[in-house]
Image (cartoon, rainbow, N blue to C red; front, side, top):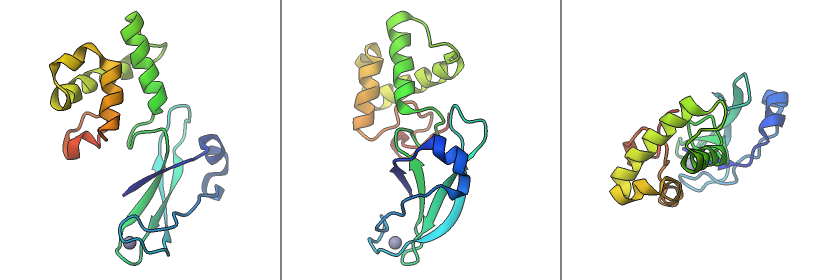
Length: 156
Ligand SMILES: [Zn+2]
């Protein structure tokens, strides 16, 4: 299970495992309150050359493993949601991707089109940025290439 929490990525990159994560108060699975530390997993984010150590907890009650991820990022994506959306907006508005963004941007846009067709229908292809926002409100990762679990997972 992933929990999205406020994380200062810059500070995390400096402090590594000394970064002070705030332990979730309750297990999101069974609601009991004594989570145990469960090591770290590598997370990669745009603008950081090396992996950042993301905290994990485990619930001794139900065995649920809880991974903390930074708010503002989709699971498995290295680029911030706001950056992806701004890039799409620029592409739609000007026909050009922001500098250095074209290769990823093309992946995002083709994935978005597929999510639009699956979840919203053909008419929404005319309004990709609005579709991006609507898919997010539906709990779908708009630029995911995966349709497992409603497109909530995927890599880019
Ligand atoms: Zn639990």
